Image 1 (cartoon, rainbow, N blue to C red):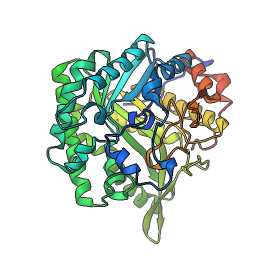
Image 2: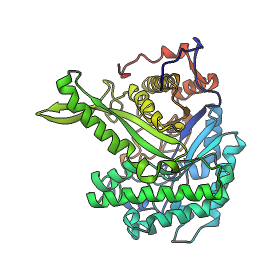
Image 3: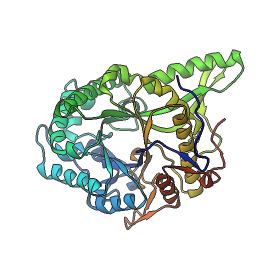
Image 4: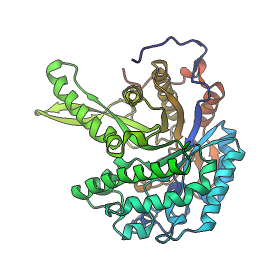
Length: 422
């Protein structure tokens, strides 16, 4: 049972010893010139150049510079991805030069004393894989397992935590329901098939990673959204709560039983927002929680992160916040966001939730897929004309938190509580 525990250090809201602090990136979104992928091919149809990744932030060539900045900012961990389409440009044909490149990338992190969380699939697919039906193909899990079996023995010694698939729920929803990711199908039957194949693929990949190294720690990163009722009156709250609980299971949790709970050594949670259900004309509708909004119009609701951490603690597995960030050009807002969310993480830890790390999205301003280059999530500003990097003010606030392994009281005043929820 989770119970409140007293804060022992009044000067600093302390986090557990050996807590992992850092940021995350996605290969396709930062590397540039990922020409063998389905995303690259799809985005060439975009009318606006700002919605084509192009050189992105040229992280493929400038990764050492970026890791130097991460180290300067105090990070002890980095989450990054492999670009499958580079490594396996044709079915069953692997490029040793690309594997060597990623080996150098991982070694660069180790040289800087940074732990590695490595993502194997982060939205983009090899073009050949898409041509064979993508994740709809019943052979897709086998293709993915073949890729994992190739790279794990060569890269595994430098990996601390493996992420098989990034946000399977949001990928399937965007690609097969909403239609703003390739292949833009809007086909519910295909959605179900792809979701099931991704669950199978995770299980196969996890089994392979554990076979190669029984000490491997494997999980997914799961986009989680806080759902709650809008009203407090029992007559209205009841139906709203039911809608919230059903949606929470279908959107946040169903992947775990489908893929086998034992195949997850940890839970990776990506959190950005919360929704409340409100009865209108007898039907529940959703709206953002949190009065303050970010540049994309999403409500800011830190309390939702605390609530989800408490709920997910029932899985009895270690939890990592694998993404949490804000699209904004207002550094005061980014600072408030960072502190208010970390405060909620700390509150969950005080209740006994086993949270072991926090990885901010993102290390760098980057190509935000179907949203283009305009949203600025990065701790480090990137000038997309020159590709010059400049740490933002919030990145130094984060550095102070990392150095204290907690939130000093003097920083709490920088968060005025707006959007924190009650």
